[in-house]
Length: 272
Length: 327
Image (cartoon, rainbow over the protein chains, first blue to last red):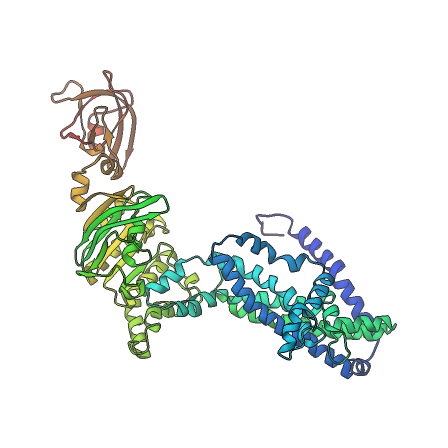
């Protein structure tokens, strides 16, 4: 090391980081690909192109994206209320946002199922409108929204708090109306955080298992998600199939997250 | 356009921020609101801008004789510059400056070409040509403050309000920008009200200085009047260094004359406790003899100190040509 750094131990900390990442992330993933890699491309294609896998993939990625998008909207609103207004019970509400993080996903799944089942509290109302709550793709979406939205709130909240009131006041003195201030001053400042929140909620939703299996009903071709499909393959001792599906899922997820990260960079130019 | 502030009152809960404030800001003048933090000066500026409302039933704000108390900030035609610039980080410098024009209702909004023209003019006015495509974070503090000024001027405001405009800048830039603002004001002649806690800044820059303290106006006048004829002990002490004599009288360090102890016209004799010579000036601290307490600070010329061959511990005489007694 020819240049002196303020904080010593670069070599040590980098070495530790790489070792740790290898043990925790890279080696298990490598094992997965090793397992799946024993098969040729034709085999991969045969397993991944079955209608059941494609249907599950469509549901998983589609419902995850939709849930993450809704989480962004709802999360933005909740954050706004938490940051901008002072009302009794605000701290309680703030703490409640984290509950989906802490609640065992199975508990969330069972609760949501009983609520949204056709004979449940909310499911009954939905049924009158001809909407099936639990045991449908919509049910999957509900569960994924539930677990996703705290990510949006927690990523946007600090940014919104830092925003302060000066920017809005500056825009107001320049003649901008409330809507213009929101659209042209506040929202652009929040977009990077919203994208991060979306990414986290999306990634979390793709991997979600516990809450979804209760509410979805797990009908192959209809309400079966990829993680469940993998588990059911394992239960039938089809280890190779499970590994291939998992690896394929991983590749798609990684590509999507990587693209979002690129987009994030584009949006982040204005940061110091 | 003149600003008339008529018996404005403002309280935040139990805390009184402004207590019956009345003030006239003449058309085309540069007026400083000077005071320590918590004196209410920023609150007053924000009320003039319409960012804050005066207490109901208290008083009025008139722009050129017209009551604007009920007019929203965006419709008052004020240019407001914040201490920390408040630039829109995601916009370029040109977009920042054009913002006030871009958000105008369609019927009033200038054409694109006109806006571009106006932005170019403003960039020239604040001497930031060629930076139009940069973003705020790429600029220095002084440059950002000038962008904020250009942005405020873009809407052709009738009055310009500056909240501690140089507060976040370092001393060197601050001085430069201060001189520049004075010249700039003389060029455009826009009625300007600015807030500062720096007495030197207020005295150097303003036509009219308003000294505030504890939610009230302590004294209003030209810098000369404020400095030479302070009406209260607070103003005396706030505007630069001053010696307070035990009997309650005040004298500024440069007003005290140094003499030999045996000379004529010596009011007090004392012992030099500290001597500091820097450039053409000398700061002399003297502990008076004969029962008087406290140290006196005297600013003399270096020539005189050298002529008298002053040294620490010498006994010298002091002459007070003017003595003011204040409440």
